[in-house]
Length: 113
Length: 112
Length: 238
Image (cartoon, rainbow over all chains, first blue to last red):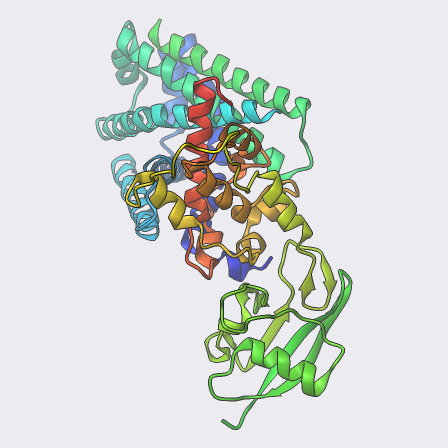
């Protein structure tokens, strides 16, 4: 099966949804570990938060926000497809999802930098 | 896995998705607000420490995420690798359990 | 029309190679015209399928420049890329010879999905009154035009990844029967289409919808089956 068969918006939406889901699943344990530093006291959590203020980390976090929002909006599209039986506008919804994801990611970045 | 069990996994995945849709929206809004007003341990703990509502929210959020991630990881491995059968199901269940324990530990740590 | 088209055609079975032919360009030429020209004038050993030539039977489906199409309804001008055409048999099916695939698995899955009408145990007292505008009838009507050409099956990633997956056509057919209020076999049918070889394996890539020459919506039908099986499961009927 060739790439030319797959090269349409709904397929790329699937790829994004799967990749973002996988990366988020792999990120989660690290996220929970970081938050649990609070158990050792506020100072430990602050030390970790200081580390996150580096520009590289802020950009990485913005990337994570982008992945999360992309997975969320893509997921909402799937829920609509499976439960509301929306057939038309699927391409537009893919575009809309992408737009919202970028907007949220940008909003985070602007606030965090 | 039987067809009925697969059908249950589908329901779990969509139900947790619906819960996560709300939880993630709240979480994103919280993150952006928190980052905007300055992220520090004091600010985070001021929100979460001793607050049963945030605790409740995060316990539910983590449970939904742990189940959703487990089902998702199982699907990806099953489709993209030769691994299948009860050993994969067990491994996916362990992944869910691991996320659940880590997440609840963190939520309780922020509450206590 | 003075040019020629450079056509590469798959020759052989599972093992084989692309062979090149030079076909004169003609007005309103279809890909089926090209294949027929090759077989009649250049290489009589070429095997391919066609029947109606007018977009009704689906026999002529093959892979044209990487995409599954009905060759009788594909104008060369629409798909030729830099005066080149590449023709291969349909994907996801065993190749018998050249452009001819073995459709057995495709139709076997139709049976496995219980894609046949099941009458009630005893004859009904009266004709079934099915309002054409009812939700079920509209859902059924939206899917019954399928002629089993295999284009959706050949375009589906999940079919490629999972040999047991019933596929878009079989599941679409099952959905039309789930919505047929006269059918008595839905308990077994929902059991047959649930699970990892059935509707739950679909991830809504929608390549089937993109490629279906009859503009059907197998993804939508499969979504319907997901809802129907979930409902049955929650009621203890699956």
